[in-house]
Image (cartoon, rainbow over all chains, first blue to last red; front, side):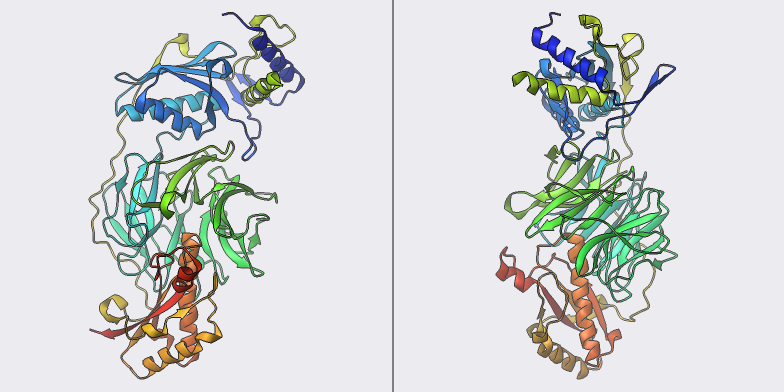
Length: 400
Length: 198
């Protein structure tokens, strides 16, 4: 291959940059390498440029969607860091080549399931190879969808991109806030099927469900601890909406907070803390409390008024939430530790983290005051809308 | 500068993934670094067979096992005759993002209290509603707070709070589907539903 002058200059500068500024520690042990990534910056991290070639139709769509929302961008081959080449006639096959080292680093073929699923699996292998992390291409979301735009709806489960959506309820009742049991095909959600907002547990493998919390007043905002053992939720049976904690089956119920307007609990992945929205000193704030009870601490949400609906990332590092400036909602991300102020990312509400702790699903206003689901990479700020279920899709929860 | 524009993202990308610098093109100032990933064994293509995932059972049993029984009130609104018209004239409205019962609403409270006082068998279901502007779970909680505030106001007027239950609909049941201040003002409300045994 001939090398042009500008390409040589690029390589020289790159080499000089690397030689002058060693950023990482790197150790090699029996042919496997430990890779410490540069700390990415919320909303400002450049995507990894790749070139796609040979894929058509659905397979190309899937690859582009999956890679875009995990921090890649698509460029011409001479500007690409990786070349992704393959075909999808019959089944998906593909290779990934490091364009600077001129080394093939992945070569795979897929069979079984569907072409769509094979493309998702290839995207996952690309992400694993290049970013050294598990891809999200084969993960699922649950959400509520309201055909009439408001009022009654059903709980849906779909692939994370919105394809393959299925209803898991047929009550034609108001529903809200689905929450996955970690690692299991089971959900909690709020439903008015009994003419009251109750929290249901629903086993998606056998369709069985039971009421976990059906106290008078409000039962909503179920949140499962990462180990699946405990449940946090908002009940108003004490006279004001507060955060309560119980076992996953509803037993051993204990009140955790005593504010006058608490909502939306979310667990830290280590199970030690619950973050929630509340009001303090006449201001709406995010707070956290030890999961076993204790002193409430208030988080720094400077610059993001009216913070609500927090969700704690699976790696423990971030809390995503919704803030509200007048009529506009924005997705914000706050470091879970320390006191750095949040970063405002894109318009939307109800963020839920994927297992990779960098992509999240949320809903935002689409045409006609309807809500649509969208998937966002918080570091590159790249996002893409999911396939629509019905009129109004909202409150998504990513299976983790 | 055009060259800078190309170099900078490339340098960041390189830094981020610690790619090999490809020394074979003759720049011997650069120490070659091993690639960050294992090579495909013998350069051969690996093959993956995907299994179908566990299907979701969508034949949801419409019945469900009832959960813990709430003994704080001993009546169930869904088992009663509900009369929305009887007290419709006394619907209370709220300020934006507030569950405070305004002074101007005291006559409505008094009328509802009077209706309950004069009707010993009657119970009351208070619905709390919001305008569309908050997030969903926040609004579900705000609607409940509005209903609870009305229950408290009625308790202060001498009504036994055990006769009163609350339900929030958040922003799910607007009185006016419009998207302006006039509509929003109508939607921020508490409605009183008189309940009698069947």
